[in-house]
Image (cartoon, rainbow, N blue to C red; front, side, top):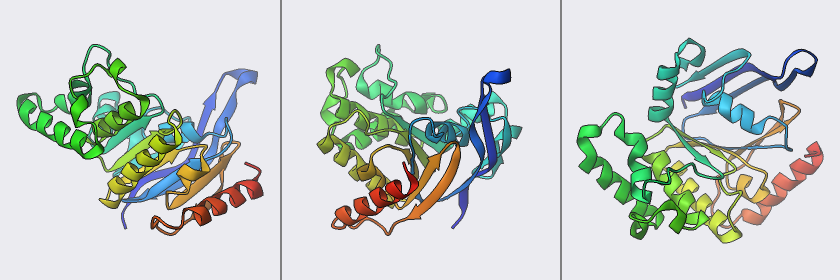
Amino acid sequence: MRTLVIGDHIVKSFGEGDEKRNVLNGVSVEINEGEFVAVMGPSGSGKSTLMFALSGTDGVNDGKIVVDGRDLSEMGENELSDLRRTTMGFVFQQPTMLKNLNVLDNIILPAMRDNRKNVATITKKARALMQRVGIAELEKRDITQVSGGQLQRAGICRALMNNPSIIFGDEPTGALNTTSAQEMMDLFSEINSEGTAIMLVTHDAKVAARTERIMFMRDGTIVSDLRLPKFNGTNMEDRVEKVTVKMRELGI
């Protein structure tokens, strides 16, 4: 299996002088094609910082990051932007949508930069994705006229528009109720089964238990890397128990 993302001894600091502190302390990690990964840890442990570093969204102070064979340190801002747009998808706790565009237009926006002459094709794909995630009837609605769960589904559609190799999610179920969160994880599992790697930052043991690999962080380092068998739809309680036991062991 090919390694898709490599982080080698990543250091990320914030502040200056006596106020300077490392949020990532020499973290090394690899994510392979098609992996389904969660990152857990207490607030301030470096979970989101690691995700932003690996995706090239935020720079690092030291270390090396390679995505799809490309060293991020050798790329300019425009190249990084292109790489994120074509290779990665992003789903956040609160999707960032433009208020002056309806749901459909927000979804197709990332794909328009390289395909302005193929609006019909892009729109057809967006509608197919909306149908797949159950929001086909919402395409003309303003983003203020849909629920949080529906907005997250739109965010997934947008993340999938450019056929990314990996999707990064920062607490994507954090603002959802239990039913909507479960439906979101069903979608992520389906997307992952088709070959897209997924890395989710989460505090929720039930979310992490749906993945196949969980990296636990504390004080800017990865303190444990738990592997789980593929979720089969019936072994959820056992998986959650394994995650919670490991959290207790690590004091997380």
